Image (tube, rainbow, N blue to C red):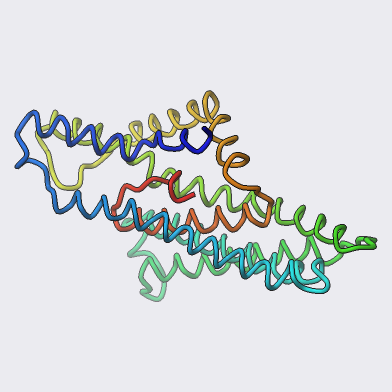
Amino acid sequence: EGASRLLNEGAHAIIGAVIGFGVVAHGFGSVQWVKLLRIGASWFVSPVAGALLGFLIYSLVRRTVLASRRPIQSAKRALPAGAAAVALILIYSVIGELKLERLAHRLPFGAPWTAWALAASVLGAAAAAWLAWRLTRRRVYSVSDMAGEFRVVERWFGRLQVMTACYMSFAHGANDVANAIGPVAGILSALRNTLTAQAAVPAWVLAFGGIGIVVGLASYGRKVMEAVGRKITEVTPTRGFSAEFGTATTVLVCSRMGLPISTTFVL
């Protein structure tokens, strides 16, 4: 029952609705079937990619931390690396997509905007790694068995999940909000008689979509949380970190490729 609730996903429904009115309005020839096949293929490839990334990340965590003789000491080395990886991708994705052309010609040394975005991301990743190292290096726990060490490690990864949750929220907004706002952007362009391949979307429309996601999360999100977090498989902080990191990376890559995939299916 919990897994069946996950099938109610916006990306699939929106694409189907757009095809439906397109066929009614202008016939089957109005649909770009090659593009649709590419999108449909991504719906099968993206969950596999998410599963593979989640598998690889958790295998690495289990091998380097959970399976070590001293999990707490191993976690003190692994947590800064995980925080740095999340910060690096997230900061670069945000800054790299700002594309502030007005500031580009003012950048020193003639470096391109992407180079400065990468430099800022590296600095942010270093700061995140230093903060994680700072928070764990002085912690001393008097545990007498492996179960106690595992509890400490899971608690640390639970705090790291705050970063991966932000990372996944960013990726979710980059893809799923765009699914909802896409038809609105097309309507606005048609009303302005400026229908182009890439429609300019006003900021208030984007804010409208963001508010809608927040309201939906506050009202019905609890049911989906329960289905994903409890009714599929047992989730611990280390497993949740692996799942969120793999999901967010997959969704973000697909967003950069312009593919409206299902975040829920990947997760």
